[in-house]
Length: 334
Ligand SMILES: NC(=O)c1ccc[n+]([C@@H]2O[C@H](COP(=O)([O-])OP(=O)(O)OC[C@H]3O[C@@H](n4cnc5c(N)ncnc54)[C@H](O)[C@@H]3O)[C@@H](O)[C@H]2O)c1
Image 1: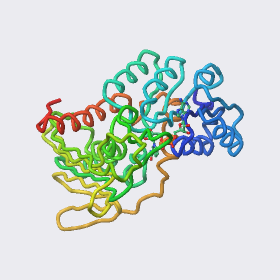
Image 2: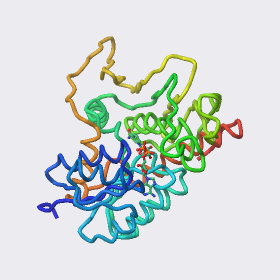
Image 3: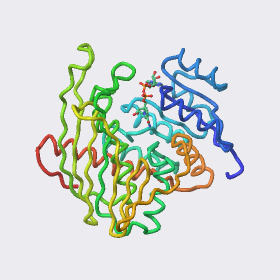
């Protein structure tokens, strides 16, 4: 299939869906054949702006289009599993936005559908695809940091609760959770990946919901606005995570990992070895464009994506365990 193009349909045309669209259109190995959104006006507007030939409001009609061989899912979280599974069962490859799903049970069903249909399922974990993350992961793979035994990452907003179309972000039945599953997933996934995706064995977490008053009363609000966790891995390593939509502390985004040979942090990428700090020159890479290219290349070159269906399952198991640990006020073994 290496001389062909991947022909894509995109469902859900919020910020994420449109970022996917731009990525496919800019890449020589893909083209966008269709867009789909429940909001017909939105779908038509995007199709016109980006010159997309087919417009749908019902994803099943889009899936019946045999010229389409891949689907991008940029929908609210509760639709990730059903839309992804329908697409895989229709024989399409799928790039699904983060978080993989509302919980691990859904992510397992998605991974099973990919396997049963022999199709690629990749998660759009965009932070893995920035220039600094890719360079650091290569250093880790090359053994430059030695054995990595500690990581910490935070995605801390002082104020920043998203609502989404119809308030889905803050309704647990639709989102699966709040700041942890929405932005904590980015921080956790990236530090876990940079540590080499060790197998999690134990989780201690605490989540809080303290900022209901910031969201208008008519909107259902039953999600966490801050979460803190420690995860232990089978290889002995550990990581610490902070994820907040709202917290009375300065906003911050950080990631650090420490190994036996060297340590590293991002923003900017800095390597700590003995008493030297080195700041390598990092290539400028747009993560949204790069993740889409990777997905297309995986389909055409028959490669396993670096953000695979199986990793999506483990990621959701860690997030589920943080919520469970918080509820029971104790450690959860995986
Ligand atoms: N990677 C990132 O940085 C990033 C950024 C934003 C959002 N996201 C993810 O993308 C997903 C969407 O988030 P968003 O902020 O774009 O949401 P949004 O609410 O702004 O947009 C969702 C779109 O989906 C449409 N939609 C809803 N139900 C539909 C259906 N049944 N069929 C077709 N269209 C339907 C809505 O009309 C809306 O246009 C979420 O999973 C979110 O976590 C990722």
